[in-house]
Length: 495
Image (cartoon, rainbow, N blue to C red; front, top):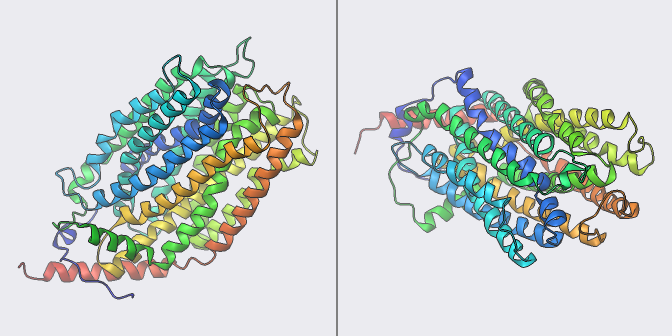
């Protein structure tokens, strides 16, 4: 089971080794994650609110459209990963797809927020299904090859943690910029809409601004890593048939540590996605925060990101990755949900109190630091499966390793995207609601169900990740096996 399977000689793999990364290249590569950070804040944060409360599409239908699009995109991710792993283009395996995604990302994102006037609810539902799926496809054309590029350009056990740190830090910065544009510029309060996030006029202009931000981040990252292309691995020529492809996927799913990563990732992803879907409802209808205050809360990522980046590197170096991740994740779960628990217990200042917003900002900042640190370490752990799989199979398939995992996480996120609409339907949340007239019992019921799900799934995620087995010594052993095989391939006479 653990013996390497026969593969073609890797002469081209041994031809070059990645050069050390400069700080400039690390930053330019990380800027690309601003695209992902922006869409997480906007699509994950306000799309459900926009279509259900402003366009009056039933929340259950909106969640269904978002969930189905994620399920379909999960399969698309895997196809893109396999195609990218085996691509032999002049621009390498990753960059052709990354460049190709730029225009579709911007166009589909803007279309998502600008449906034609006069559509019925069912027509709006269809518009949402088509545009959000098109956006997710376009976004995957960048995220899949870009994410697969990172383990190759940063092979070291701690080097890749640092690289993921730049990626998460700048992704969070992109999210903070998108939040400021969304809540602070385009969804500001007006006399008619004291809660600016309920103002329909600001959404189309927001879509254009954030769409351009994502396109720019994508392009800058692509150009910033373009010079690395000649130094990257190129697969040996081969005709990948369906059975071969299925066998490669099966080999990855037979890896114990990968299965643990998938299971733990699923359990952790559902409460995270559920939180993202419901947070705008919690801030609007439980804490009665205006859009300006919501913008401040989300913008705390700009503070959390660099601190989280530094904390991830320090804690993982001291504790090893697994122990560091478990400590950061468990503490982050408690801090994230603390304010809502205190509100249900009657221990938080009332809405409108001068101390409420500072408390929420403080906890959001600390939670962001812990969450970002944990995510950096966790993704670095998953990336270590790339070399373990390569040591076993003699084939480098970082696209499949990272985005077979991404596929499963998207399935979980799809479920968690459907859940907010289901929960809103269970508590009979009305369309077009206003904080001043909404029955407080509805939001209390919603909060209780949400917290029960979040804590239960997070606890199961912690128990699962405790069984992950790749440490620094194991990673170094895998690198040694790969280096020995490459040296032997380089010395082998050409056929």
